[in-house]
Length: 432
Image (cartoon, rainbow, N blue to C red; front, top):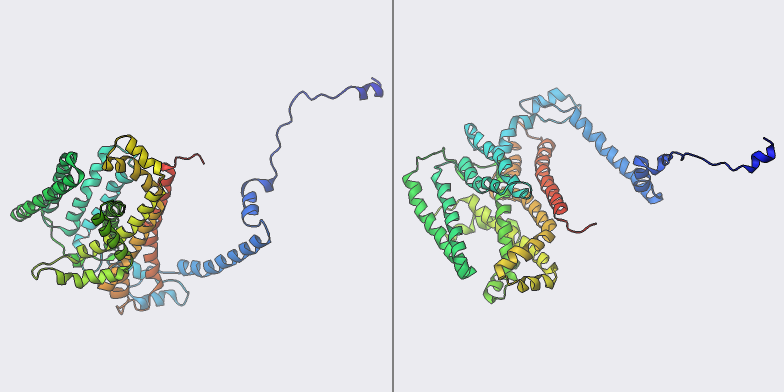
């Protein structure tokens, strides 16, 4: 074939060229680093400064942890072991961890009871938090847990929490029966029924005080991180329904109901929590009869619950205000009364909008439980500031104890935050 004829024939490829991989700088970690850390002069400078700060912090933190010791009976033993290496004296945690968790007055041989109550918490909480994935009958574990936990931690006869449970069940059943005549009448009938059953239960508990009886433990023996968990769990659980009622009451058309809710919310939100705790510790006793001994933990639970409920009420009120008016009109067009409209249409949407705010209040509430140390309740912070640091064995040890407290609180608060983010993703109805 001549050269002229060869150049006149077109070249036709019979197979496709395999796709070439993208450039290294346009994919994977290289792309992320280039776009997020070194995308411009300002970001490059801030990245370098951030790396220097992290390096400075880790250069002091890592040797403090790596060279630390968990052995020793006091600070003098730690100093002999460390020999100026700059490590931490973590022996104080190994020596005082029972006090950090349970306080110094809870009997040693009974610590299995709060430990068991804490473990049962992981059985009772999932049915309520993951109700969309678990059968409804598993909520029975959530319902009976508060009464079992009270019996385990405080002891006494099982009849006392059992009668309380029967009072709540009886009040609820009466409420559902009378609710057909009116919500207010049903609520009043339910409350009266619960009070009567509790009054009868007092005599039954006294008569059967030896039935399934555990050794009683007084409230002043509660301490350590156990006290923070008790206050945080109980107050968060009670403040959410109370906050919902306050938010609905503030939007009520009844002047008395609306006025009471407005005054309550504004007054409680305008008073520091530490003031309410002092009221619970000192002032509240003056309003009680001389023979009445109102448990301090119950008084503190009431004050913290009122405080957090006022903030949650404002968060939920914002969620209610964010709903378009058409949702209320849709409920009216379906012929629903006020309780049905709120339960089926309004509140589910408002609570979904309010999830970040409610979680923010819950996290702040759990951290604020450390304020009980100012009224001589030895929670985790109170134990560190009081019996541990004041002892001659561990005088001068600060960072190790506070680091342990930070880890405990961060673990709980981070778990709450992650659950809220997961719940928001599960309830998302848009397509973004």
